[in-house]
Every structure is written in C-alpha cells, then in structure tokens.
Length: 293
Image (cartoon, rainbow, N blue to C red):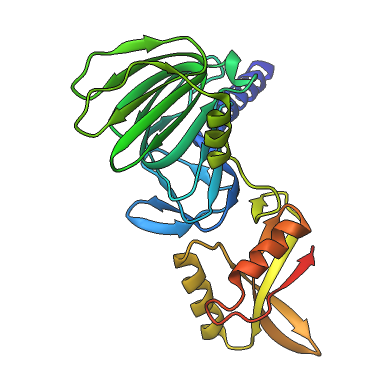
C-alpha cells in the first residue's frame, strides 16, 4: 500500500514538472499597443500573459513595443512595426533539457538577451534577421530588418552568422556589427559607435509613461459605457482588430446595468493617461477616463 502511494506521488510530481516545462515556449511580459499575434490562421490583439507556442507570429504597430520572456529565461524585445515569426519554440521536457527555437524577424528591430537565470539553461536558438541567420548559444544581440538591408549587432557573447549564399563565420568580439545591403556583399565586421548603439537599443525598449501594459498593472482606461450589448461587442471587435486588447465589464450605475469597454493593466497613471489621449476621438470614443482598480 505504502509503495503504491509513493509511486503515485512520484508519478504526479514528475507529470507536474513535465507539464510546467512543456506548457509553452514563452509568455508576453509587457507591451505598448497596438500589437497582434497570429495563431492557427486567426489574428488576436496581443496582451500581457499570452502564452507563446510554435507557429505564433507577433506583430507590432506604430509606436508599439513588445517584451517577451522565453521559457528558459531569455528575453525578446520588439520595436515598432516589427514582425517576429516563432517558427519553432520547443521548451525542454525537464529542467536540464535544451530549449530549442527558430525565430524569424521579417521586419523591424529585435533584441535577444540572455538573463542570469538563462545563462544556467541549455539552448539551441537560431534567429533569422531578414536574410541573415544568427546561431545563439548564450548572448545579447540586436538586429533590424528593412526592405533594403539587414543589420546585426553583437552586444555580448558569441554567435555564428550566415547570410544566404555566403559562408558562415563566427562573431565573438563584443560591440561589433555587420550590414547586409540588398544586392551587395555583406560588410566587414565593424565596431559600433556607443551613441549609435544607444539609439538602436532605444528602438526596442518599452517607453516609460507611454502606455506600457503588464499583467500586474493596476491602472485602466474606460473608453465607453453603453447599454446595448451589440454596440459593446462591435466596439470591442473593432478595437481588437486595431490591436487593442479591450474587455467588456458589466457595471451598475443608478440601479441600471451598463457595459463598459476598457483596457486594464497600465503600469502607471501616466501610461494610462498617455493611451487615453491617443485613443480619444478614435472609433467613436470621446473623453475616455483613467481609473485605478
């Protein structure tokens, strides 16, 4: 009897650990809207807390940002008007396993950073920035893909680099970069100017007070209150299509039921106010108001 109980407990513990690591490859940590994710042929507004899986595509709009946290501890940052395809995102089945990923940046700025926790994990990550593929084993990189050129900068660590049609090479000296212009050979490895690097890094950082959303944010923007269910649903759908993760909340005002369309999770009042100013006079929204919940 005791042996059976022990076996059941060990089996349950093992399954729980495996499930925790196999659940998803990452999670959305913070965003600035508008932003979307594509999954199984459908498009949804991106919001903090969304789990990430192989095949997902993350897209950001104008003045938007996205901060993703991978299963093994690394972070991925996207700048505005960026598209990141998570072609492969396979979390390890156990803590000592290998995190495997193939990420493709087809447009915009991107940064991949290994955290201190991530340094202890095994990974096999390839990032394709336009036509340049970078093999990551533990590092800090920044890249950007445009129509006429791809740029890659090694901030720290070491990587293998290969442009389509060219030989693979290794970069291991920090603060170096290359440029791959369309219809031209890839440039030589060059040292990066620190002022220029600061400008690049700012392209992928969330902007304080400019509408940052997180799962733990305690500020909300109420955009409209209506009593018609169809009107509430229609506005929510319009906002979702535009990359704004709005929700509908039922409230009681003077003993009457109202449907309030709102977005929750802004980090500070300033973040919420910034978004309220942005959304004002759009989609029929007039004078949205900021609340703490």
